[in-house]
Amino acid sequence: MQTEQAVKMAAKLYECRDTAKRLFGDRYKDKMDAYIQVVKSAANAMGCSELAAATTLSNKAEGGVTAICYLSAVVEMTEPSN
Image (cartoon, rainbow, N blue to C red; front, side, top):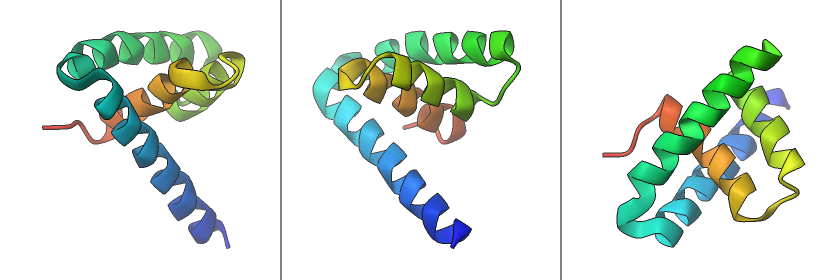
């Protein structure tokens, strides 16, 4: 069951990245670079993984584009776009 949940979570994260790419177009890389730095700093400050930090930041953002960007940043950190 955990594998199924992990696959579903990964699909949602990639969906966030696809959404952010559509929203930002040519500005996507610059936007993600900024969000990546925030996620890395938060992970360091909280002493947790980058995924945990992005999830926490996303929850504090209370949804919307900002939440999508934090989650997209984690995907970019793991598997950068071309």
